Each structure stands twice: as structure tokens, then as C-alpha cells.
Image (cartoon, rainbow, N blue to C red; front, top):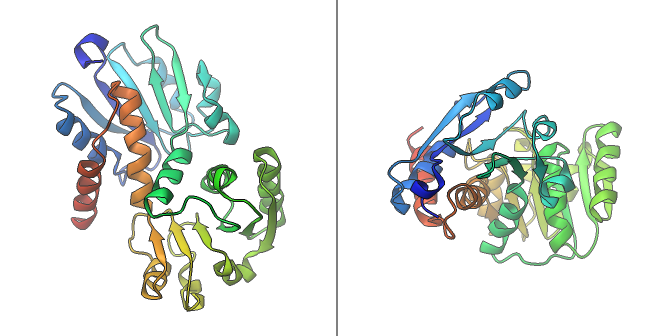
Length: 279
């Protein structure tokens, strides 16, 4: 469906902080490759308090929005409906505005994780480990519910976080065992490790990477490579990075917002790599 037929050609990413976001780079690269010359994609510094007013002020020229923290859960009551994928983790990172004016929410992080892993040859694992317990960790559990045959061990810093991860496991149908962060180096025995923690958190664990590691999925893209990813790759382990996740989830967003069936993955990845190299 063309932008002229839709009558909607504006999109943006919302969050706080937002200045670092690569989403405009990726989406604009997709528009250029697809020949969508009338399309715009911006960024807006919006927190939970400002979100209702921002959404209320949008006109019919808007096709969709990308959401980052802290809006992924705060937006749900403001939507007309959400996908089963978004409902499974109570997190929306994508809004599409329908022709009849409805606001529909989705989560492209989960399928984006799965596609990024498949790209590195990871389609099924016997067990896995997750470092951290935030919103991205719950998305990681949702992705693992589809590819992990056995137990997932989550390494966390508090019993409250541990209980939260066990609760997500029950809800998503994943056997989750929790362990204290002080034992996090034991995670590296798993064939798949997903690191969902903030920058610098896993640096001290780099020395514990084993001789023959499995696959590391580190969701950070800046700074990149992380200390852990560098050590992992030096040992010959496969590494999936945050840019892989960001690009694959953005591909799905572009397709939903524009109505095009195939977003230009490689052009978007190249644009993201160039933007990071220039920082």
C-alpha cells in the first residue's frame, strides 16, 4: 500500500532519554531504499507524564510510533488493542495507526531477537542463561519460550527481581531458575547466554569466558563491542549484538508502518553501522 493511498507518512521514536536512539537512522534508510520520498521519521523526548498529551495531539498524517523506555508499559492503557506478543510481556514498542483511527500496539523486540539468533544459526537450544531482570529480560524469556527446550537460569541482584523472573517464566511457559548475580560467571556454561544489563555491568565477567563458549547475545549496541563481547569473540564464541536486535525489530516496524512487505535489512544495517562508527 503506497503512502499516497494511506495518507499517512509520519513516524517517530519516543522515549526518555532519546537523543542516542538509532531508530531515525534505520527508518530513514529504509524509506530511502523503498523510494518513500514523502515519509518522515523523527525523535521526541517524551516521558510517561507527557505521553497521553502527545498521542492526543497527533493528526491523521501519522503512520506509527516506535517506543523505548520508559514508555513500553505506560502506553498500554492508551491503546485500542495490543498483539498477543505484546500482551505476553506487557510491553509495547510499536504503535500502528489504522485507517479508522485506532492505535494498535505490538512488540517487535521478541521476533527481532529470534530472527537475530537465527541469522547466527541459533534455532534451538537445550538450555540458556539470562543476565539481568528488566523489561528486556522478560522479552528474552518470551523469545526463549519458542526455542529453548529446557531450563533458563536468570542471574539477578535481588530476591524481588528473582521472583519477578520466576513469575514471567510461569506466565510464558518457561522453566526459570534464578541465581544470585555473584554467581553470574556460571551462566557461561549454557549454550546460549543473553545479556540484558546496562553498559559496564558485565565487564568484570569477561575474564570468566570459557575456552569454548557457546553463543552470546549482548543486547547493547553502544558502546560496542562490549568488554564481554570482545572476550567472547576472542575465544571463538558466536556473538549477536544489540545492533542486530535493533535492526531486525526495526525491519518489522517499517513493514507494519508502511505496509510494505519487505523492508531493506542490509541497507538499514549498513546505515546503523555507519552511524555508530561516526560517534
